[in-house]
Amino acid sequence: MTEVATLEPLLPSRVIHQFPMPSWIENLAVRSNGQVLVTFCSAPEVYLVDPSEPSKTVLIHKFSNVTAMSGIIEVEHDKFYVAGGVCDLQTMTSEAGSYKLWEIDMATFDKSGEATVKEVLKLDKIGCPNGLELLSRSEKIILAADCEHGALFRIDIANGAHEIALEVDEMRNPENPFIPVAINGIKVRKEYLYWTNTSKALFCRAKILENGKSFGSVEVLRQGFIGDDFYFDSDDNAWVTQNPFNTITVARSAGELVTVAGRIDRMDVAGATACQFDRREGKEHLLYVVTNGGLAGPVNGQQVEGGKVLVIDTTAFKTG
Image 1 (cartoon, one colour):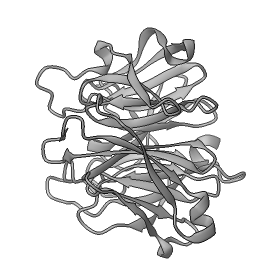
Image 2 (cartoon, rainbow, N blue to C red):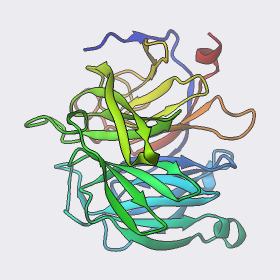
Image 3 (cartoon, rainbow, N blue to C red):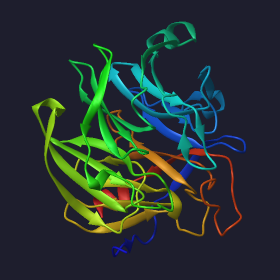
C-alpha cells in the first residue's frame, strides 16, 4: 500500500442530514447558492439538502423504470444532468443497456417548488456511468466513467450521441476483482483528465486533446491507493473519498497523501462516496461529503447506518 500520513487532529465535521436505513448516497452536486443535490444507488431518487435549513430536505424527483441513480453534473446554470439505471447493489453490477440521462432544471424549483425533469438520452452503450464530468459547457459535452467496462465515454448532449473516448488498461478491472468497480471518479483539471480506478487501486491522469476526441499517454500518479470519487481544491490538491476505508484522504499536488477525516473503525464518514466544495464566496473551505453508511463494507464488520450528508471545515488543512 502507498504510505499515507494522518492529520492530527483530524478536521472537524458536522452531519447536515442523515437518511434512514438503508440509504446509499452515490454522488452530489453543489448549487451556486450552496444547496446540495444528492443521488442514491439504493433508490431511483434525487434529493435537495439545504445546509442552512436541513429540516427542509426535499425529494426532487423519483425516476421510473430504473432502480438506482449514479453521477450528476451541472452543465448550464442550475441545469443538472443525472444518470440512472437498473443496478444490483449486492453484486455491484448493472443491467446492460438500462441507463439513461435526464436533465433536472432547478430554476423552476426555485420559482414553483417543482423541478422540471426530462429524459434526454439513452446511454445504452454504457454498462454503468458512475462518475460524470463537464468537458465543454458551450458545446454541452460531458464525460462518463463506465466502471463496469473500464472505459471513458464522451456524451454529446446537444446531438444525442455517446461514444467511447478512451479505453486503457488503467481504466479496466483486473481479472476476478474483489470489487468490480474500475474507473470511478473523474475530473477535468487544467487540460488533464484525472480518474480513480477502485479495483486496481490507481489514481491516474491523461492530457485531453481535440476536445476529448483523443488523449495523451496515461500517467499513474498513485498506486496502491483505493479511491472512490474526488474533488480538487484551489491549490490542485485532490480530496479523495475512500469508501471502503471510511476516510477522506488528500492527494497533495506535491505528492504526499494525508488522511484528514475519518478512520477505518469509526462511523464519522462511513462509506464516503463523493465530495465537493461549497461554491459561495467566503465558503470555499467547506467540503460537503456524502456516504453510504458502510453498506458496502460494515464498519468493524457489523456497523451500518443510513447514508448522510456532512460538511468538513478544511481551514486547518489549508492554513496549516
